[in-house]
Image 1 (cartoon, one colour):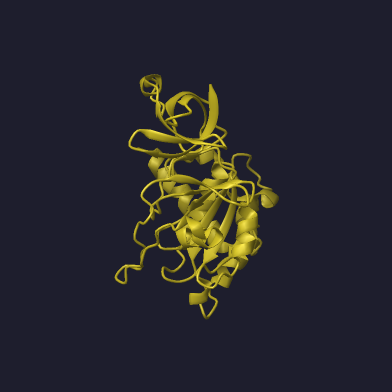
Image 2: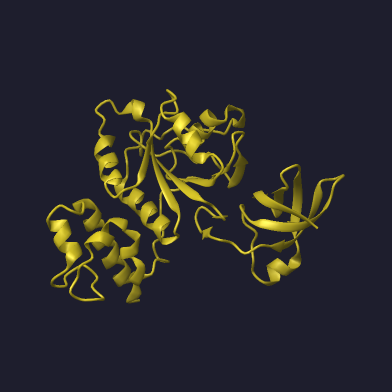
Length: 290
């Protein structure tokens, strides 16, 4: 029996990296019976033929985490990539990614790319808000190599996933870090200022300086339906030091003597963040009614 990590899955075949060889494997029928689908990032045991480099996956180890979209398991950190310009930063979508990262207990790094296109440096306002929470923020330009060395260091010896909408330069950044990858990059639609989908499947890529990163299809929507209402406030780390509420089950909306709402009114919590929390809270409450 051999062990490895699934790095890619296409058409029912799973590519398993042992650290020395790459095997093309199928999954045993028992996984289909149990409704288990192997994911990239899965640690597996398999029976393989060293001559043909083909085999069958026998067992999948317990996952420490799992994302639904992008579909990947056992990651250490999520790098959330947005462009400073073309397309402009979608702050609502960015915050949804951050909330989801907190919900999944993932270390989140925000990467604002294409800063060479933002001559007015409008991205700085978003950067200051994120760093006040605090989140780690990377400022990069795949075109001019700004911030690439620092990004490379953050990826070293970690399993990372790149996430974010299409057209923000995720594949371009990976090509800068490891030029030999030659990942496809897409143009921005002038009509809607969105990127074209260039990554057709999720794949875990080994980096020469250590670590692995998942290059995943970009997407512009986000399903918050799986969030638990009772855990929503935990997805806003800046709330923790201001949670001096009179009611133990305070939802920080219309309740009296609420420490979170008072902190937002006094500017101790960013108003954009608090307003986004309230919007999510009410959306989730509305969803739970049906």
